[in-house]
Length: 271
Image (cartoon, rainbow, N blue to C red; front, side):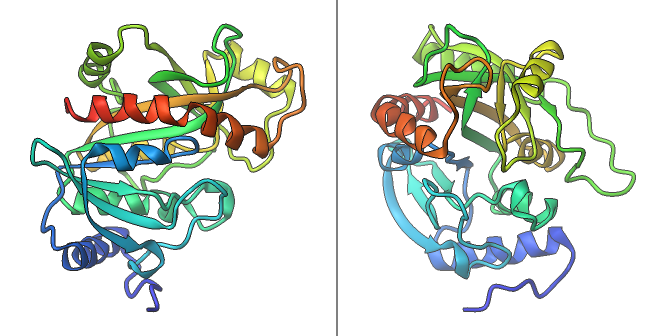
């Protein structure tokens, strides 16, 4: 199927995608949406019963992910409590050059599908040496270093408490030991230099990565409550004693996968 957009308005394209998902999953509305980043993929199988799987490349506005470790599907799952969860495995990153609209299309589609809560996950570099690779960290705030925004025109959105304090409290009911920190989104695809890492640290960042912030902004603009959690896959450049590589990110995610997937599933069960 050709999934090239038939409309240019991002809201209308999201509605088209939501209608396609409803038709092909048999689920007219989803309660919450989850974006699974590097290391988090196994969580989908623990959330509940998979009721339908859709090839992302067939959905209007979506394309297959360009990053190893991300799936090419959208999955509808029903939790034991009867909630419908839309799992977005096909994440578009800013560095792919498809534009910010493409980056946040999944989020807008989730909102158009009825989701009131968005769960964002990622694999990232850690600036705190006490956070070993494999450590999950709640996102308390972010710094958007992409010099871009998903909002267009005179669209003014308050980002105070963008990452819900209420949902972070729910996560701590599951695991009281969870740390939290500020996530800085760089453009990528190159990793940050040691100087850039120190810059991020000085302006308040604890985590650095290439996703999440733009999606969170779009979610807030759509009226969604946002929960973010990162997996520290490596210490950031200049802090890590070894050179960085994507293979290292994948390896750390695989090692931590069973534990963090169970953690995320247990948190989702309380949302």
